[in-house]
Image 1 (cartoon, helix red, strand yellow):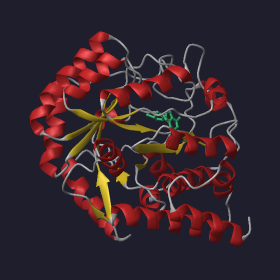
Image 2 (cartoon, rainbow, N blue to C red; image 1 turned 180 degrees about the vertical axis):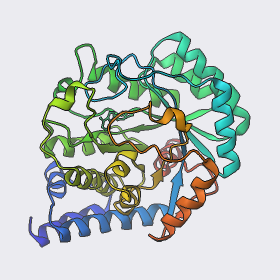
Image 3 (tube, rainbow, N blue to C red; image 1 turned 120 degrees about the horizontal axis):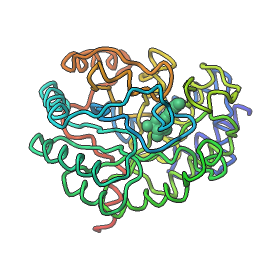
Length: 366
Ligand code: 5AD
């Protein structure tokens, strides 16, 4: 790619959202030399500043259970992984942890777990949400595919955001990283349920998957626009030794995984402009400064893990997932000082709702 081609693409992307073609996005994702990467990240970060200022939103991530009914071929907590030690946090422990987070200055939580599509699990979550309601924190759920009725009930119980990664926008690639019975179409349908139930809708993909092409990844970015998503969470695939996919060579070094993860963040910002984009934990697993690099590539949300230390290592989605620290109160000053070094501040007031969601709901009312 010549410098003038790159400058043309970036100029177009900066002028308005959804301006790029599949070829142009793939072209951005193919960049490898330092100068091109620098120009791409700089343009994406300038858009982040334009829409969201120098504020980084943050949410405490609580991994409430690693029990899972799914068998995704890449995931360390898949049903068939007998080596995973299973747990489910009792609701009162979740409440205690949330209270500590609130006292420390967290205004929002992400409640994540393996996927169980059964009524008993739905009732457990009902109870957790009822306990959390008086804390008046922003609640994001990330609990996998659920039916519309359950999703609507959780929304009525105070959950306002939901994350469900589509994992890849290619049904063919999806079927190569999941066992039979896992359906891409079903997962996509659940994204529409989330919309119907009134959530701010988040989705995303993994990159650096075996067999994935730059064209697949460019289509992922277009998919986010077609789905009119409010929030994006993406990260590089990192093999886990106790999973079937670990045997498949991806052809990526860790450095290449990191760069691709950062390029995907930048491409999403350049294409979508006003969405919330998370700087994922997987980036941090690949580089100590991965989170900051994600922000500088256009992300605006970080999710410090506030799961109790004794459980963190049991929620092992991939190898090298960070498990540091147990003290919630110290996380915020530490984050502040790291972010200040890159000219960013934590967004301490409000819940950090998606600007895209506000824009699309205002449009509807107008
Ligand atoms: N590497 C990176 N991300 C993974 N996830 C699951 N397993 C892995 C892995 N091996 C991601 C999936 C899932 C999210 C909770 O974690 O994208 O949606």
